[in-house]
Image (cartoon, rainbow, N blue to C red):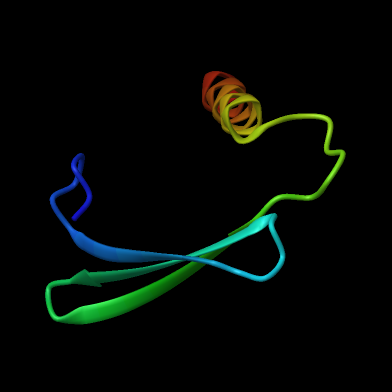
Length: 63
């Protein structure tokens, strides 16, 4: 169980070390989420999300 969301999920590592597959059961629906990371990428997930949010904020200011 995910401590933050309280949702059931299972975590499976793919054969490729850079890929994680999670299976979530939420409200009777099963979601399978696959996340992969490219080796040698210039930014990590936190930096990328921060950059995307800042970009959206700039768009909102201009509108």
